[in-house]
Length: 136
Image (cartoon, rainbow, N blue to C red; front, side):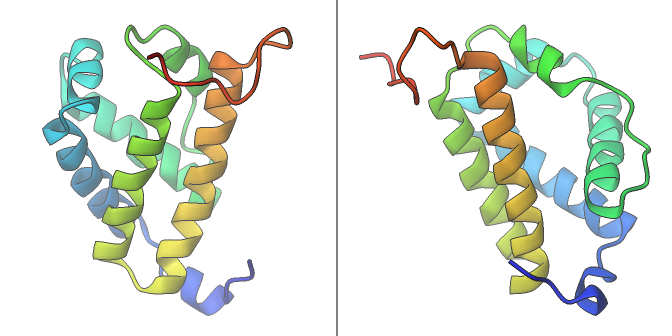
């Protein structure tokens, strides 16, 4: 999908902070995602700061984020493949609430790629079917 550079120039650090803050409010209220995040995060502000830097690096190519999201997610107790769909649904909802269609779509495309990459890194094994099926 092509985006106009003029529109994407409206993606700012402030917009990223609004998105991250609003999204994680939803995550923290979600019945399935909240317990996983709450078990992993003692102090939310450092996590939010990392997410501001992460999305700044992804959307604005600032290089602010220094870290390895795959390693962080691999060790989360209770993480399941189907939770990525729930994460994406909340992320997409937040994008649509905050931004016009073009900016929302730009964030959503990146989020889908990131989610798929994390899911593959955490759960894919050549000797198992893909995509993994939810536990019965």
